[in-house]
Length: 128
Image (cartoon, rainbow, N blue to C red; front, side, top):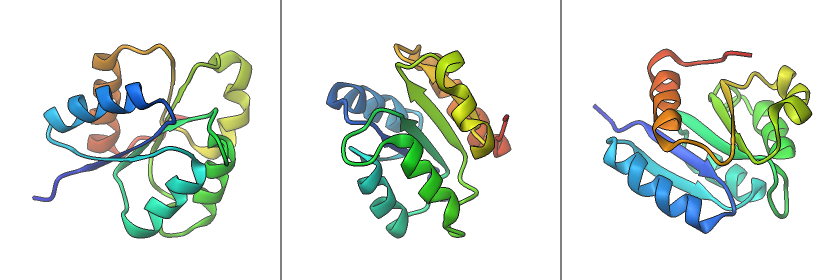
């Protein structure tokens, strides 16, 4: 059975290092991108099973990248978990129509995030 793929899109190198170790320890393949443009490039090559997406990114923000991703038939159905320092109550409405699986505020509990990743990969997960 192929490894499930988790794509992290975040410009924080420390978060990427921590999540790479944790995600790989759970048996998933880890991919990363530093901004929305790089995320779209990765999606042209690989189809992850879930995308962990920050909102505040250089070059192309997470919201714009998500909108572009949803326009592409090859990756429109990939579940997305938003990871953001912005409070859900302040920006959550932006994502209602974008079919987000979960919205997790930073700083986040890694164990909780891993549970959400597992849930999305197991059940396919669109909550909103």
